[in-house]
Length: 492
Image (cartoon, rainbow, N blue to C red; front, side, top):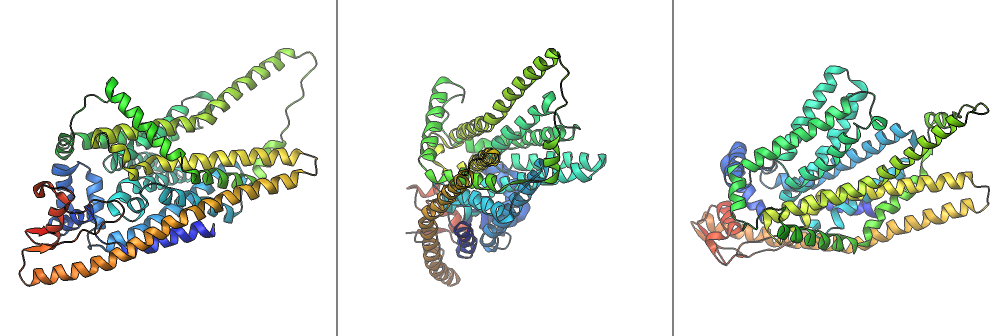
């Protein structure tokens, strides 16, 4: 917990060293010159159609680079609190109790893996356009779910319907904020809504189903607005058409990209830390009073000769086990489906190389990491139950050994990611110093009347910088830098 917490704290602190890079220049100058509504209109008409994304960009860049500098801290705090409250809500629903330090450790490990275990850590945590598109939607969903639970527990009919309306609104926001997360959340929330229609899984009221339906309706409405936007059409026009995504040729390419993606993720062993920390959490969970009372209720004795009742009970038990198996494997299937949906979207929007945009992986890596942690919790509960029923003296040593191995896995993963954080720290600090010197020089030249200035590309996080395209008229990064400094052109 200490190592992962320290890494996240360093990541938040590095926000102070964030300087404009790539799309930062575009967002900064457009917000400054066009205003909040102007940049929103520009995104809709000429960029990508993401209305909510443009609005959030306008808010973040409304005071220059101050917003991008504090954004990592704001997101980390909001994410941590949201996941902690989610764990608390789930624990109350299941009648489980766990030490707060263990729950906090699990949350920190999940965040550590999300932000640092991927191929583009800088773009996911410190680059505002990336975090707005690929991290903020997850935070919105977490807090929307928490507010929905609160409304269902403490609110009346009016409050629950208001919550459903908010779900529709947030669905529209996410639909115009991030196409990848719209697909991911649609898969998971849609599956939850379908499961709520199953008689044995139906809730006491229709409120949960209405909320899931509202979220999905909002997603569809938001994505429709985005898809038909002039900016989205212009963006698609720049990508050579390869035919329908359902054509045999495209499907082969999409499946190939999807397999390449999972080969890359599968070769990153540190994700096992999510399973391990879940196992530790499962071993640490104790049953609350309500849960123990439910388990103490014994089955009524069967009258002699009631074989028919016994057979019906056995059949019901068999069906229950089948449902348990389906529900146990469903999260894996949903992660695979949502990741494939992200790949299809990336291939449509960015061509055959779209799958390599590692920042977009964060959209399905979040549920993947949470699912792994959930499986770990279930395994820990199963092991703890068996050890509790065991009369062998080896039960306690076995529990300690398993817990120690899982803890060692978490520590090993955190240590493995230390160089990633160190490299990001060095790159951010060094680049900020170089950028400040160059920025001071350029502003001085502009103050003296220069209209063409020398700009030295300062690369970081594998982001595009000016002059990465030979044709200056097509070099959007160079043009954004020119607008940022109020000059007609920049040169090497």
